[in-house]
Length: 498
Image (cartoon, rainbow, N blue to C red; front, side, top):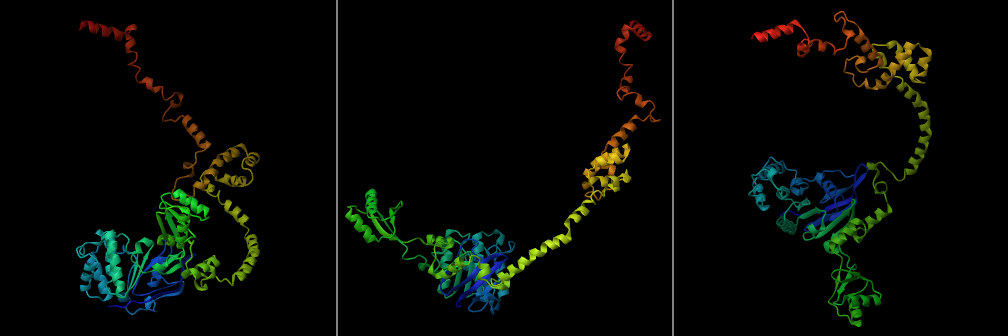
């Protein structure tokens, strides 16, 4: 039977950039018991387990298994069994196929695969592909993979996730049996209700810091309790407690009284002639204590030092962590501040030497450069460029003739469209295809009025006049009987002869 090992965390800290996922965590997990590792989502549970298993290198501190880091274990696959993600199996491989590969990697005989499939209740689904497994079945397969090497240490990340009530009941008994065999069992979860019927000890963290360590029976403070009482005549009981100066809280089940023992409540009721229907002492629920611990409204003595450090040092990254990873030293803050004061004095000098304003002007000047690319009026582009900086309209009108002014006015819309030309670098189309100017309109009018030798007389009439010339012989036909035309007489004679 494999013996369990002590898991020990000594000042473990892990940072991801500016985020401290685990902050100076020191805890101890004993063999022979099921230890619950609790905390809300994002508290640092999975990161802590990955540090323990050598998957993540800590920024500070150590995590050991039997006094040895995981990477230094002689036979890690046969010493520690772990399940961090139940969805890491290939969907196209069968459950038995997965375990066979893991068995070969761990140097375990193949007969162990069939034993574990039977143990976790997957014997009937051994040949099915994992892609068709439910989440609960994948959890069972992960547990079987963790037990392949018959390890003395089990690390399970939320093993009850996805299990039905029957599966949860089964895994609770299974983990307790493994602990009775002397193994070390560490189970993480974010809900106390899921593990309080299974675990014997608890580690609770919040924001990467330890807030509780001890047995589950030590979670609730024995001095933190209330007396719950009730009476058929509740109004009379309320009046008696009020006259005695005792505060209470009205509940559905009665009155909750703090700061008074049940014997005192009974004496006050008896003196007032009030018959009580219930009188008992009740402490806070474990779930209530758990929420108070993770929210910081309750401080347990087992983690008072860690919580005090959190209160004393608002920024644990700068105050309590080593300088190797973060690169921040509290003693060097003053020196860095002095150095920072000298930097702003040099910054203006550098900005003056750089002279960003001339650079901006230099960048603004190349903008009208696409104008010379045009084939028309390229000689007038320099004049347009000089006009852009002061006022574009007045200068060309005063210094150039009328034709040049017209051309400058035509070039103004081209300046507005100039930024779009560089984007169309792959096009060979001329500049005239991109910009429609007044000159193009005048040119169209000129060619429209031009009397081409191929179409003599075309400009003299509209396009609509030739249309009535074609049907003219057909239009006067209804008016023929009114006129004396020979064609009409012939037609009439022909009609009479017929």
